Each structure stands twice: as structure tokens, then as C-alpha cells.
Image 1 (cartoon, rainbow, N blue to C red):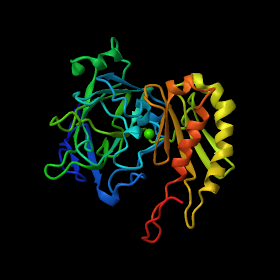
Image 2 (image 1 turned 90 degrees about the horizontal axis):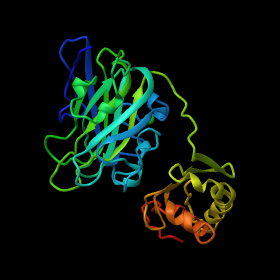
Image 3 (image 1 turned 180 degrees about the vertical axis):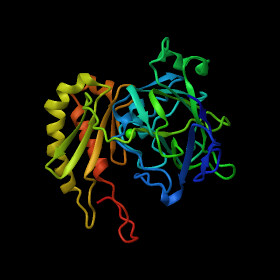
Length: 348
Ligand SMILES: [Ca+2]
């Protein structure tokens, strides 16, 4: 199968269609700046990210280059959970500082009629735009080996170049929230693929920090998929009013302690903290997350409504300060007092 390639180049929002061919690829990119950029990722020309696309149960991995451990693990790109601001490394996936990008392999598990491939990113500075080449393979050809995804001769080893994306503005600053949608220009199927490969480049090499903050990758086959339960990922209801999203998928050995000790303590104490720190006209967040990360240093930290826990420290302090550390971080989640009617409010 032969694909015509179009280039999104720098023209955000502009719809670009390649010349006549059997499978014309259309690349649409959109950019939100300033207040238009929110945690909802609403774009004029690109669909919002989905947690129920065909990619939600794909096997996704880094096959070349290395991720920055200050970011989220690669599954950040397929779970539909999005950053809430433009500088949230812990909610984004990005390749390591000082490296020239890398490759992300999405294995859909079986040949899938792909209609759209959508990618999302957000950063207030140069790490906002997206620069990548998208390759695909049906994967069933004789002699095909997905391991060639890390090699240099992609187009000689069963991979087809589908699109070259580059959303860097030609002038002005790079910062912003970007959405890119790669589709068939007639609204049909791009192709039947099992594998998609993103060959990602940095947006600039002026300093060490040019690797894009990716938020999500969606692969649409037009169907709604139900994400399979993942070991170590669950949502805990707090008194039917609040939700705690737990992710200990990187630290499965903590499960016993989490079930027996952590969950009951959080369910009991979050409402108490909310009540103790109540302030006029202020509503504490009704959703927050607790994520245990194996390679995090220190003890724990909170950004907005996201609590991050250093998995190894917790493992060694389960009988000590582990529970108290999470309760301490829940206080930070609750203490997000915002100005009311223009008045600056300090934590009560
Ligand atoms: Ca998704």
C-alpha cells in the first residue's frame, strides 16, 4: 500500500491534504494558548483526548531512546488522564534531557482498522510543539519482526511512513497546548495496522530541554473500548462524594499495605481534613490521585490534586511514617484556596 504524505509544517489549525493518491493522509493540528488551554484539552479542529480509544489497551513501550524519569511512565500516553497545566512533568511523558528524542511503539495486539491517530502535548515553553514521524505496520507479513522498530532501516523492514508531523510555529514562541489528528482525508480507514511507531524528535537543541511534553496518544478505530483493569490502578470512593485515583502499578509489592492500611486511612481522613480546613466559599477538590513511583527520590510531593510517592522510601517505611506522609500530602490537596471574587485568600 502506498501512502501520500502531507506535512503539517508550522501552520497550526490549517488543514493540509496531500495530492491525489489511494490513501490520502490528512494532518490537522491545533494549538491552544493562554486561557484557551485547559485540562480538558478542547480544540477547535482536533477531537479531545479519549480514554476509550483502541489505544487504551495497547501495549505501549519505548523502543529507542530513554524516557526522562522526572516524567510519568509511558502509560501516561494511553490512559486518558491529562495534565492540568502547561508545566506538569509528572503528568507528561517525555524523552530524557539532552537526548535527541526516541521511538514509541504502540502494539494494538491485532490488526486494527485505524481511522485516526491523535497526539497531544502541553508545555508553556519550547517543549509544547510536536515533531515526529509516524510509521505503521500490519505486522503479519512473512518475516516481519516488530523489533525492527528500533533499527535504522524502517522502510526496508516492513514499516510504512504514514505522516510527518511538525507543529512548531514558524515565528513567535513555541509554548502552548497542541493537538494533532492524522486521518484519511475522505474520512475512511488509514489502514489496517497492528503496530504504530512514533519516531519523535526534539523541538529544539539550543539547550538540553527540547523534548516534547506528550500528554496522550489516541488510536481510533471508530469503536468505544473499555480499558481493561490494570493491576495496581484503581479508583477508591470516599464517602460517595470524592474519588481517590490510586496508581501503584510500578510498586505492586505495596498492594497488601495499600489495601489494609492506606485506603482505610485516606477514606477516613480526607473528609476530616476537608472539614477542618473549610473556608467560606471554598470547595476542596473532590478528586485527587496518589501515584507510587519506583524511581522517584525523596518521600512524597503534591502538585495540584496529584500526590506522588517515592515507592522505595515507602517500601522501607511502611511501619513508620508512610501513612502519615500520605495524609500530609492530602492536606496540600485540600489547601488549594483560590481568590474569591478578586479577593486574595490565604489558607485558613
Ligand atoms: Ca487514549
